[in-house]
Amino acid sequence: MDSKKEDIQSMLNLYASSDAVGCFKSILFKLKRDLQAYNFDPDAFIYKPYWNAQNSTVEHVFTATKAQTFRINNCFTNSWATVRILAGERYVLANSIKPSAEEMQKMLIRSGWEHLKSEADTEKQFYIHLARAYSKYSFSDK
Image 1 (cartoon, rainbow, N blue to C red):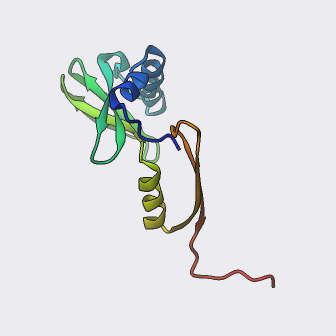
Image 2 (cartoon, rainbow, N blue to C red; image 1 turned 45 degrees about the vertical axis):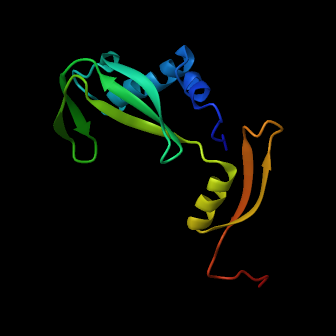
Image 3 (cartoon, rainbow, N blue to C red; image 1 turned 90 degrees about the vertical axis):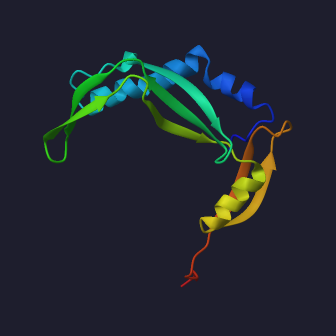
């Protein structure tokens, strides 16, 4: 697990590097391909990461630089839907959670896991959590 950093801006700067921007913008090109988005322009968005302190997440936000109207295909019903995007609209297409080790332990417990052990690297930038799913059924050697 990648942990929340003390210097939030330096963490955001990593996500704003040219390599990271290219990686996140590729999401839009994959959406165009996979949804068969006719007349969709992935280059008409600006990517910027934002810190959401309430959720300890980096929000990967895309802002439309121009209005677009495009169609996407629903592959389950083989029908088309029209989507309209206005210039300036913002969309969060992904989140990267960055909880502290203690926050992660609490999330594991709330999600039905028994926290067993945590280990950190020497700089406390990354953690490994060992957890076991709680079960209302006990297993035997039968």
